[in-house]
Amino acid sequence: VVRNQDSVTHGLASTLFKNVAVKLEGGTEVRGKHFKSFHVDAGKTMTLRFATAPSNFDPQTGGAESIRHALWCDIHPEVKGELFVIETRGDIGGG
Image 1 (cartoon, rainbow, N blue to C red):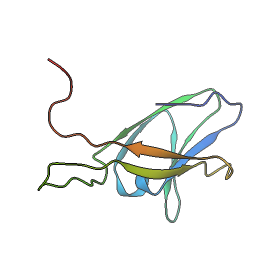
Image 2: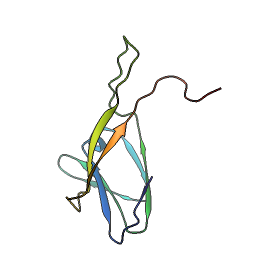
Image 3: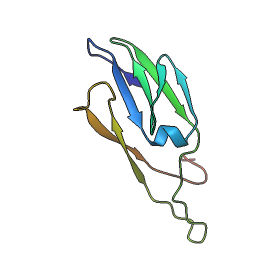
């Protein structure tokens, strides 16, 4: 969920989005040559639902590494960040 509490539209861009299916609610999809981005208007909220992200899963050890993906605002180049993906396998939760 991305909430834009600013007074201007912002974009959320990454090369990850070009390689992974993303279902969008409440924003606008924008395609660049090497990336895909999603814009959210001022005061609005958008939801991004990701299909399985590229994996570093090792079937021999059963281990998985976390992956970092660069993010940036394609409207405001000074705004940058990263998406930290942590992969889990099997049941999640207690019980």
